[in-house]
Length: 291
Image 1: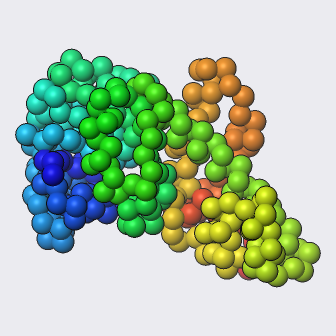
Image 2 (image 1 turned 120 degrees about the vertical axis):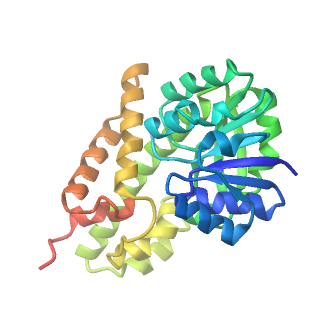
């Protein structure tokens, strides 16, 4: 069992840290809103600290799952950041979806202090975090990954190292690019079925077992047909991720025409007031406005 710190107790981090505690690890948590950290300790035991650096003191592994590039910089290298409390030989594991640029920047800052850095964004959403069934895409030194893989196993069904620093974030971009196209295609298919007078659930029952099947189809078709979107991965966060993809594509000379189009469709959903809706709300664009 390891001494761990977990920074960021949002819809993902809260249950992920809980799985670490349930696995028997010694866990200290930090959250910007202290009440959330207190609630976590009341539920799972362990300790909470007033700063990321204080939470990281003496930890062998420090995990983070925060919002964006700026949030990550603050909790890692800012005043009271985790690196100020970590000792030489410790490993920082970043589960946030961020740019590869900030990953490289913080990995260098960590190395200067003798700390290893593993970029490890996740896929599986809130349900995956709660059920300990996340998929984790990792980049970083082989030895640091090998040490942290068993720790991540508390909340992952699959973790893989894809290469050196930044490879995890690049792989997460591939994941989001694929999801964007899948959700738009599913939205168009279900909207078409409705217009054609078909029973959408029966259609999915048939085509879901064939070449058109996907996680999105299995897990989201029902709520899409019921026009329910107050759950899941928010449109605002997806647009953050797609911006990372599009900016990186420009940097490396890749072309993402469908991703760019779907990003604008998500902008339409935001304009409809759906910034906090699940990403499957793309179908709302294809339906008549509610009276």
